[in-house]
Image (cartoon, rainbow, N blue to C red; front, top):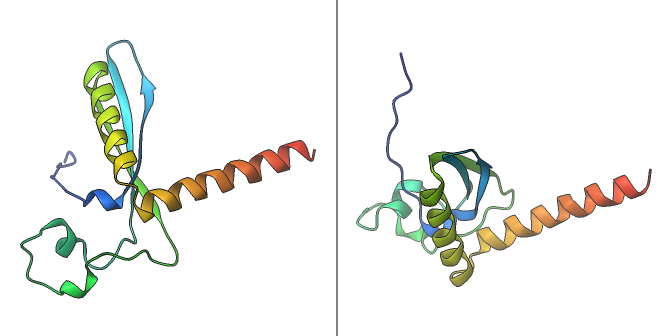
Length: 119
């Protein structure tokens, strides 16, 4: 049985990064990184009309942040346009999720660089 796709939505504050990961002749793959430990229930944040516990909004960062990703494949121009627009939104609305993701990424890069230079 093939995998059944379903639509999901996340608040922009959960999105940490977006980048093209693979470019082929006519298709590109781009990756959307998001925070899995963002605030309380996903439903209460994704649906503004949700009448659940409102105490989880505004969302707060968890102490142990976990990032996951979705990969999307489409034509090159569409991938470029989506990545460009998501990056613009992320730059204009710098969330705690994005700041933490960038800090984690830089920390990993620094660690990798310091271990390779010590050899």
